[in-house]
Image: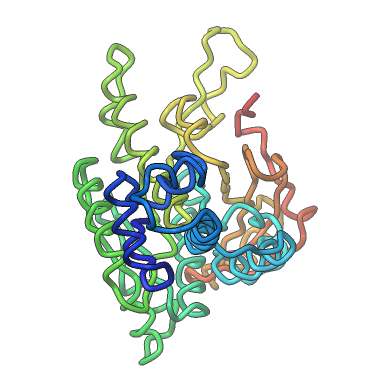
Length: 351
């Protein structure tokens, strides 16, 4: 801060005298020399040592931030994040997401086709927008499959639903370079859009963007992947944004041909082992298919049963799971884990 900005709190004539000695900022006054040494450099009669010490103390006060109690900051953080978090409204699932779907996190959501990754994220996003009227979300669609009609059906289209969808920004991007352009436009608009703050970014899917660039004989694809993920993490941390990236699954292919894991039904998140280190956590989703007498229980009602598992996490406990249902695109609770008889053997554990 320039000393001239402190006028009239400090005498303008003294500021002019200090500037003639090369002392123009608060840093120069506070740290370049002691008040006695500065007084010796000033023109005779400019000020006294006592007055200079008072001016120095006043400049230090003006240049300092206000103090806060750590307990107050902790309480404020919990209050803000509870409102900014992306939660489902289902206690079991929200308990699993606690600490994951909060600001400044970069979360990977993975699973096989039909596991409910897009449905879960759309549910979290729309519910957040409904409960937070000053929040917005950027949805990056890399496959062209996003359906605004589906989102409207979930919201039961009306004037309220239209206001919610106005705060859901959809960007279609089939290449990584386009995603970087979208993020740059978002960065420029974050400080220009009055009243509405982007609180979430969804990339569905990141596999379609990065997969074609990865090659076992070239490091260029890995560099592209690292660059994009680092930029997403910077957005999450700099602007208090929750970032979700959808990563498809791939078959687990062991290095040893006769390994006990050599089973084509075993799946794992795609994009290779390096990708796991670029996110804060991986949430694995799986659809559970009944094979008993209850197989047709909800067939006519278009209801499917799913399991969400914290596959790997730097911020919460790993290998925790819960169940839920998806009925016509809407997430509903389902508590009977024993009845589901979940088969997690088809997921290769990260170790």
